[in-house]
Length: 228
Image (tube, rainbow, N blue to C red; front, side, top):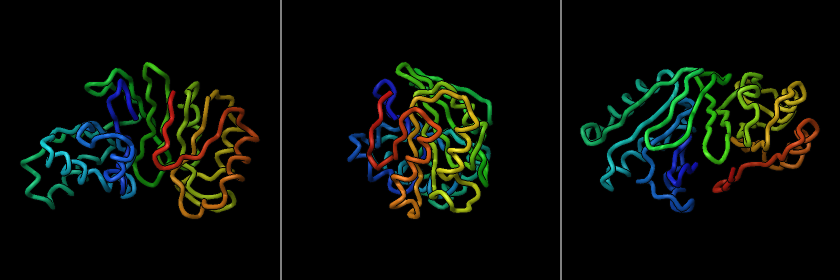
């Protein structure tokens, strides 16, 4: 996301580094990363990003994440001795209920616990132009829906199509059930984190949620741009 024309990255999974040019962002601009959790598909490009920045003379990075982030980060860095003395990475571990303002940004970010197999944080970002929530990976969570009250945009995972029995993730039907039970106001819901099983289920996914949600429902795509 861009705040005051400065990029702030939420999660850094495989392919993020190579997508920066297509998104019109120089990777050396990125000096702040929020991690929702430490599963590979959300962190795989963090160390490559730090290395790429170092090769261009940018060595400082702040990484925010849940409990365990510092230990994980240092263990991976230990495998690359040549980088250890070259980069200056400040890892800040967050706990549900905390709020902070990252250096260089005019915004407030708060977090709450998602319901996943490892410690996972959902983030709420309040900036000049609006507010949004990023759910991270989660089972259906009333806490996250309530955390999203009155936001302009909720970016929520929807990993598998309705009817599939899954744990640790959300489907259209389980998210729709939460929305039906809730009276929380949300402007737009953007669904993301699709596994291959979601292909060809796009229309039914939107229709399922629209039964209980009056706002817009959109499906995330690579390089999609959303403005608040």
